[in-house]
Length: 80
Image 1 (spheres, rainbow, N blue to C red):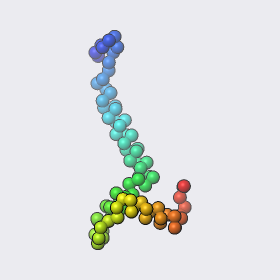
Image 2: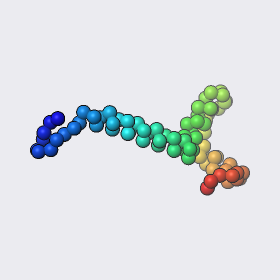
Image 3: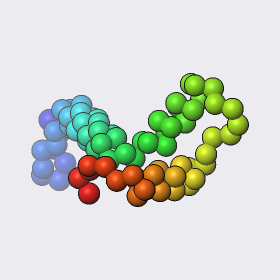
Image 4: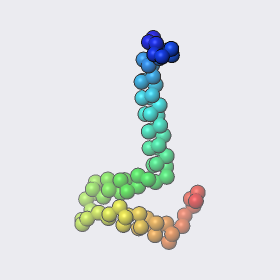
């Protein structure tokens, strides 16, 4: 334990703890993002390249416009 300006500093145990907290928060944020559909365009691109569609993929803007239009034209049970 080191003393600086009259205060004890305990830094040995903080780095692993902070790393675990940050890692946990990032995991939670990724989970919530996938739950809300934030990764839908990435999944679309993965599927598009894996299935070998001819022609170029939609841009991100085109993808979200198409997805919104499809949801508006074919409403299904959803929370919002």
